[in-house]
Structure formats: C-alpha cells, structure tokens
Image 1 (spheres, helix red, strand yellow):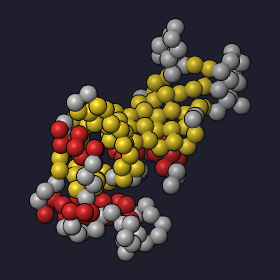
Image 2 (cartoon, helix red, strand yellow; image 1 turned 180 degrees about the vertical axis):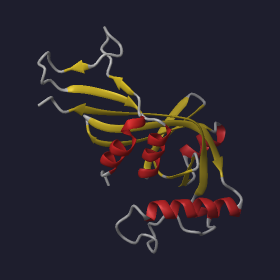
Image 3 (tube, one colour; image 1 turned 30 degrees about the horizontal axis):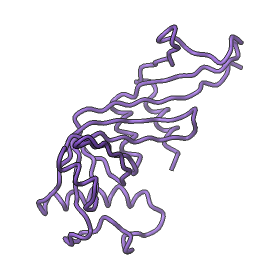
Image 4 (cartoon, helix red, strand yellow; image 1 turned 120 degrees about the vertical axis):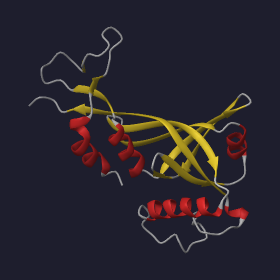
Length: 194
C-alpha cells in the first residue's frame, strides 16, 4: 500500500516547485544537519494539482474536520475521491449533526512512510448529504470501485461491507464533499552527497 511514494516522486517531481525547509532566521534556505559537505538536506515541497490528486486517489482513509456551536470535531473516514469530490458514508451521530449545522468542512489525508518521507493534502469544501437515489447509486459505485481495489479479501459479501446498495437507513447516510480549495506538501530527506 505504501508503494505510491516512488511512483508519485518519479512521475510528479519535475513539475513540483522546490521549497526548502525554512529556518527561523532565513526563510527559504536549505537546512542541513551540519556544515559537513556530506550533510543531509531536508526538503519541503509543495504538491501541484496533479500531485494532490494522486495522493487523494491513492488513499482510502482521511479525516474530516467540522465545527459548529463552538465545538470542533475531527474524525477519520473511509472515502473515495473523484472529480474534486470526496464520497463517503456515515451513520447518525455527532459528526453528522455538526455537518448538517455547518456544511463547511476541512478534509485531510496523508501518506507517511516515515518522519522523513511523507505527503499530506488538506482540502476545504462543502458537505452535501446525497438524498436522491441516482446520486446515492453514483456514490456507491465510486466507493465500491475505489475501496474494493484496495482491500485484500472479499468484504463485499460481508456484513462489515459499508458500501452496499441497500436503502436501509441503518446502513448510514451517503454524502459528498464538494472541494473548493486544495493544498498539499511533501517532505523528504535528500541522501548525503557521496
């Protein structure tokens, strides 16, 4: 599952502007572990849109951040990304109560191989509960296609499979987040000069 780094780095690095980890004294400069010419360079980069979409497409777990009446709530979800929309299913509870009161949300996803090699995407958008059968079926198809490709056993026949076509209200509420703004970063430590 963590094979995305090599593909993303190889395919997208040429189109990502390089940003150096800024020290407090000199924003924008390369930070090194020591003054030795063989020292390790720490690199922080911005992901471009293609890099952001790659991370969103490659992951199936993210975090929704929502806020209402003075309470901020962040919760993990299983999701699928398609066409600048995050699709998911949830059950009645605090998250859904807050999202209905204030549909403006933040969504975050990361791919972490180590503290020295990671990618993170943060998006802002609007929560929309999918009530029409047509939109629900579209969401289920997106979720099934994406999540089934990521699981190693056949969960589709299991009672634990959350993305069936049932209209039973106990199976949760389907929703999408229409993304308005996306940003992303990636970080890696460059190998020392040999």
